[in-house]
Image (cartoon, rainbow, N blue to C red):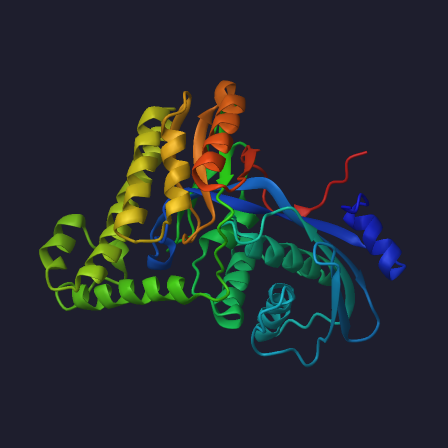
Length: 388
């Protein structure tokens, strides 16, 4: 039976002390997949699914971290942290302590309770949500007022160098800097961003295929990243000023693309065209042109499926079902790929029927019971406001 206690209550009863609570949301990426690692453009929104961390200080150097979701606790010596992940849920909070240590920030001892409802392995950035909730709690109790973009970089460093996933800045940035009622148009090179309206007449409907992907094992994810880097090296022989694929136009890319192996060409083609789609989608949202925005979502899915080859049969089924439903402007795979979720922009008045029909159709086609979440864009990480 699920624990009905709040994370604050769980913490107090487990550790015998009151703690300070922080929250960090998961995120859904509306468009701009696998562009962040090329310093390109992305359009995420923070979700109302989140991780909560509750922290109370200790006088020794021990960090006791309890996961309410796994009903499991680990104890760490903060003066002698592990150097790499071990394939355990505790890798994510540990990675934050390790990343802080690399910056010369020592955490001291504490007790922490972590609890969340961001589904694991669904492509909604449960890992960044955990890392961000842990980072905010520790920094706040240390009195460290690190700027939000720097906290995002801290957590990206943890993912890249402790967890071993070569992920970009988007996930921690969206979890950190999300704003209610808005998507973020984020320039992953400069970290400049623009707030784009997601008005109340549309909902983000996220359909979980229940096919899990794992960023921590990273094999397919890192393979795609290596293919993109191979393509960039070929492009740089012609355009040495190009730091990433973001710096190459579609025309210039196609001029050189024939020199690339077929798989490398298609991976890079996805990234180059996806950057364009993000900028066009931003303009569509500025104009409240949801039809154009939805068309770009569909084009992005086709590119993820055919060029980046990061979709799967179950995800494609969800996208095809969504495309047939009244009020659905567009649908595509979201997240790193190889399973996970689709994101659907749906008219709020059609959302109930959309959920019912897509769930039934997916069950009939695959035998799998999809989890479907309706969300509006929410606030980013911060102190938890406990409602009465």
